[in-house]
Image (cartoon, rainbow, N blue to C red; front, side, top):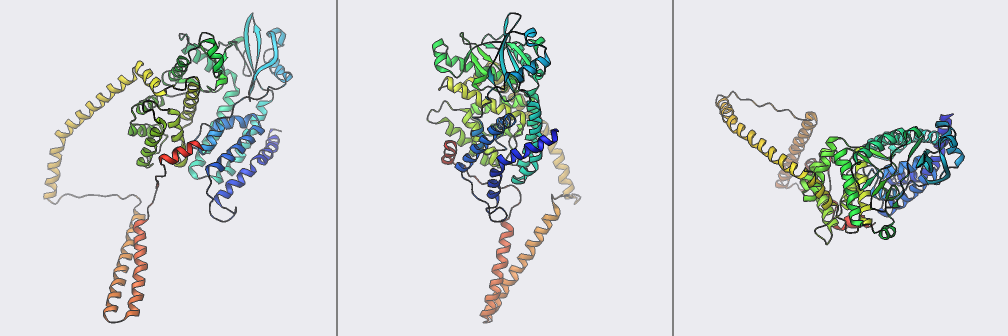
Length: 553
C-alpha cells in the first residue's frame, strides 16, 4: 500500500517538476539530444527558482521542508535559488481539529481527562505540526501536535525523492552528484528527527539548562507527563513577535541591546555549548515586556563538534582582523574550501567581498554579505559544504538579519569580537600563537645542530661517487608518453625545417613550400603539447562590479 502510494505521488511530483527538468536538459544541449550548452542568465535562474518554489508549496509539507534545507546549501544550488528559498516560511493552515484530537487521545487519553480549557482553534500551524493552548493543573500550556497523517505522506515523499535522485543526477556534474546524495541522506535524517517530539523535548531541555542563569533569555519548560513522540506540552510563554518593531518601541524596549543579546545567545550556543536552536526566524522569537527574549520551536536544532567550534572561533577572529590568508586556511580546515582550489582567485573573492560589504563606512561591515559572496563562490567552483556547518551558516545569516531589523546600525563583528574577548578566546589565541612560535624556534634550534653532520656525510658520499638519487614519478606512464610525443614532434619539426631550408637553397621552391607547410603543422602540434594542462583550472571571473551586480540581481 505504501509503495503504491509512493508511485502515485511520484507522478504528481513529476508533473510539477517536468518543465524545469526539460529546461535544465536544454541548458546542457540546446535541442535536448544535440547542440551546445546554453548560457543561463541570473534573471532566468531567478524565474526558475520562483517556479520551483511555487511547485514545492503546491506539493506540501515534505517539499516545504526540503526547500528550507536547500536554502542552507549553496554548494548544491546557484545563489539565485538559495535567495528565493530563504523566503520559504514554515507557515501553513492548521489541519482540522478532528484529526489532531485523534492523535492526542491515542497518545494521552480523552482530552477532557488530560487537559482543561482546551482551545480547539490552533494558534499556529506548520508543515509537520500545529499548536493549541490549554491548561494543566492550573498552568497555561501550549500543546504541539503532529499533523494527522503526516508520517505516511512524508514516507511516500521520501521514496519519491529516492526514485528521483538517479534522474536528477543526470543533470549535474560528478561533484554536485555527491552533494545531492549526501543532501538526500541529510534531509531524510532531519525530517524524521523533526517528527520525533521526544527528540525535540530532549534538545529543548538541554538548551534550556544552559540558560537557566541568564535573566534575558526565557525558554519554556516541558510538561513531561503530557508529552509523547507525537504530542509535546510546554508552558505557555506569551510575548511580542521580535519583528514587530512598532510594538517593541511602544513597550520601551532597547532594540540595540535586544539585538546584542540575541547575537550573544547564539554565539554561546554555537561556540560554548555546542547545541543550538537552529530556526531563529521571527516567528520563533518573541520579546516580553521587560526585554527578555523567548525562544519557541526546537524541532530544528543541531550540534557542533569541538573541532568545528574551534574553527568557527578562528573564522570570526580572521574576519575581524581582515586576515584573508587566515580566512582561507580556516575554510580549508573546516572542509568548506578544497585545498586544490586556486588560492589567489579565492583571496581576490574574499578581498572584494569584504571591501564591497564594508561600503563607505570603513569600520562596519556585514558578515551576512560576506557569507553571501562566499556562498556564490562555493557554488561556482563548486565545493561541498558539511551538513553541520550548513546549519550553522544558515543560523548566522538569519540571526544577523533579525538583528539588523532591530538595529540598522548593528555591527556583528564588534559584538562577536567583544564576546570572544570576554570569554578569553582572543587571549587564548594569542597565547597559543606564541607557544606555537616557541615550539617552531625550538625545533629550528635542534635542526641547526642536526643538519651540518648529515650534510657533511652526504658530501663525503658524493666525493666517493657513492651517492645515488631515486626518483618516483606520479602517473609515470602518462608522463613518459607525453615526453616521447614531444620528442618525436621536436625531431619532425627540426627535420621539416631543415628540409625546407635545403630545398630553398637548391632552388626547389615548390618542395620548400610543402616542407615549410609540414613544419608549420608539426610546430603547431608541438606548441599545443606544451600549452595543454591537466587538472583544475580556475579563471578569475570576480570583479567588484559583477559582485555587486550579482548581489543586486
